[in-house]
Image (cartoon, rainbow, N blue to C red; front, side, top):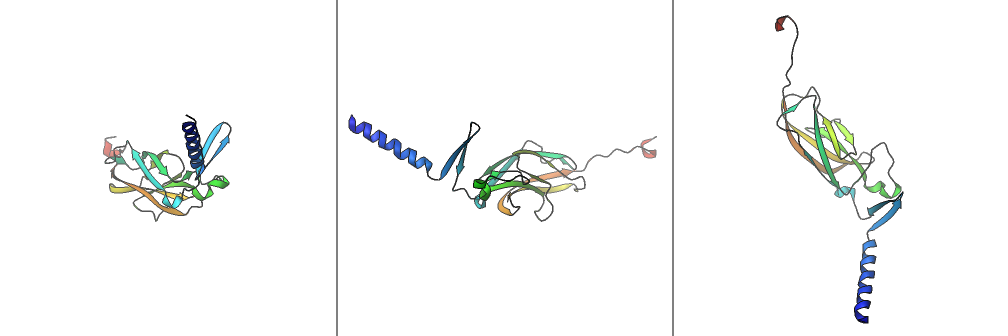
Length: 163
């Protein structure tokens, strides 16, 4: 019996010690924050989903998306990350068709409405989400969804409308 208790105590000590390797925990205002000290934002991953009919997106409308990110501490680019999270701090940037132009949206939120510009021509397009480091440097973590922008219906009032 004594040998069993000794083995259980030793096993518990090993598990407790193993749980502290590679992560830290901080308690602030009754909130427990666990940090993975081995995380690397360069290995970040992002995925998003939407309930919007991606084959019927109106120009000047928004596409509601829900995001999932790994290996990144999400923080608004205008905020300063905690000192122990600077190396993994980042945010999302959304683009249409390519990442060379200005982003449609910059956010650290996991549920957002991505605006589709009014001047986007009807047809096939790609909505791109990329994780950027807190300093704005892009990572290789991107996720794309194909959308089809449809022509918006315009109504006119005047002589042609019988007025």
